[in-house]
Length: 214
Image (cartoon, rainbow, N blue to C red; front, side):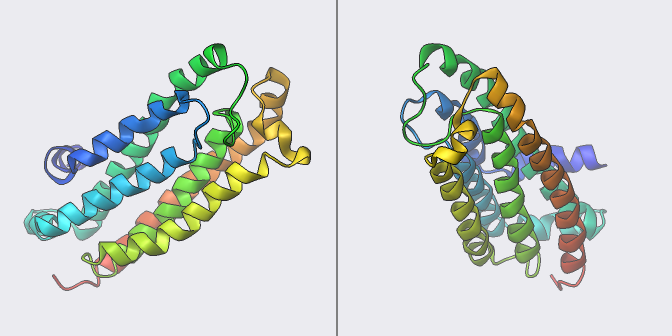
């Protein structure tokens, strides 16, 4: 049943821009570019998809199917997780490649290294934890939910990009093996925050949506 719902999300609910913004993980190969923008593009793709779903009455259509309301929420969560994880996977080979063709580093901000991916997972989690529960309070007001989620997510991106310019935190900007080993706890924390966050998102969003009268 959940596979069928996810298939429906991918074929009917996901706006084409969600796929385009997911593919923008390749931007980590662009020289002198703030790579934190990759995560914000993912947030925009999610927002456009939910706006598209509102205009096409996707939530109402799904509610007419023989599925529970919480399954509708779970399918949306699965779609977002799939898009975000795919974006990270797409970016990985380009992040590795850039260390060979652009060894001088990224003057615009953080390198696409282990710490970058750890921070990215936290940024995703911040957005998800605010956007989805807020959206499912009404299952309609995507714009308000997006603005409330985008502001702290953007702040986290700016913090990530700026902090590496301070001498005390230059190790966060390194792609040397020793520094990236030191960055592993950030990746572990990011993964834990993301997993815990999406579980909280599902439970709270499902509770909100079950109280919505469509």
